[in-house]
Image 1: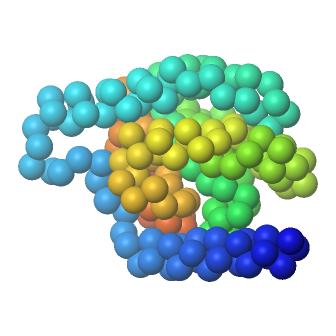
Image 2: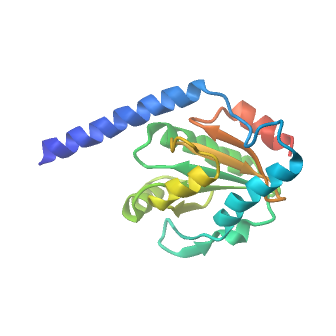
Length: 185
């Protein structure tokens, strides 16, 4: 039994590692094609972002929180999982970035694609300077609505105060690029 579980976890880890390598080779892409009109981009982004703000998710301590509390504020939403090595690797940098930005207008949140128990245990072990929520497997659907066509992790979405998706990032974040993107907002 233990050996069978070990093989399953090893296969998942290898798949996630391969996805992380593949994704790190990709550059961040805009949320919608540049050729599309502003009205089209607004309509496309309003639906998924509105769906995000309608969510009520439990935090790492099991307390249900409304994501609408972040509406009207620039937001960096990071979809991650405890079993995803690139996700876990970028979390200290995301925490440092949130600390650097203390008092600024935007916020980082994490949505874990994992079980409540795993996320609670992870949040207890690690010092994460931004709110972490339990998305469970429905978090994958939410990430797809926000532009994650392949369902890969980590997946990060930059949302403006206007509720528009400004940029999406698949794979481990390149923090120099992210800082430049945040500075341009």
